[in-house]
Image 1 (cartoon, rainbow, N blue to C red):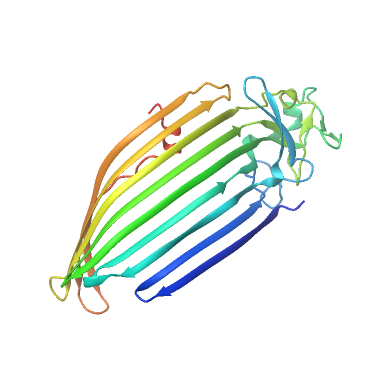
Image 2 (image 1 turned 135 degrees about the vertical axis):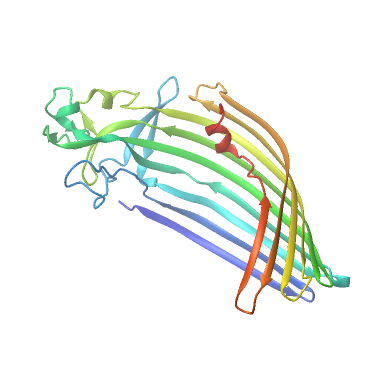
Length: 327
């Protein structure tokens, strides 16, 4: 089957002005490729030289939620991006030596993943078959012998709808040996996720190896291992004011300083189990101040040494809250 499929279209337009420059761009993408992880290392003769995903296993049915709702999926869709990244910038020289710049970006689209993920080590049909001897291919009805290598492979689905907007506005001016910048940064992000992880079944370990019948858990809606199903939605907003300065107080010495005051808000909720019950809810509002200062000494035109001290913060986003909710 066609494992890689996609297209991309890009436009980039720049306009020179009497006192600056305008730029606009957009990249429209619809691209995806096969995605899978299984590479068992404990079976002689099986390595990463073959592709597990193929015609006999790319289509599957998974079951989610308390009512075991069936979903027909095509693992051949793999991982990809269907959306656009667009934006632009403006740079202007103003009066009295001031400079103005503004850069913005808009991202919107779907980043979905369908793929095979191994669970546990490889084994043989004889160790897991209901009759202890053979099992049959779910597609070809081929009878596989007891020494046929098999492994649990999860049919994972991750659907992500992403939207974001960022804008960075700044004024700058040079006062003799002092260069300064004053800026305001803002960002808004939203994400809607639907996951179904697990959905494992024993497959024959060979190129395009099919799932099997005659193994009890392969016929169960619970599968052969864990299942983790979620639906989540989140919105985040960031606002930050920042100031930077660079002072050249001697031919060989330059001192720079930067301060950023940031406010970060997140609203996020998760339904684990797809039963309509919110199991994790977050309302986060935090402000932090980060700073940096550095000193550079130019020994000559080719050599220099510098020292820098920083203090900063990484603000949490949706995955951080979900993965560390009870921490």
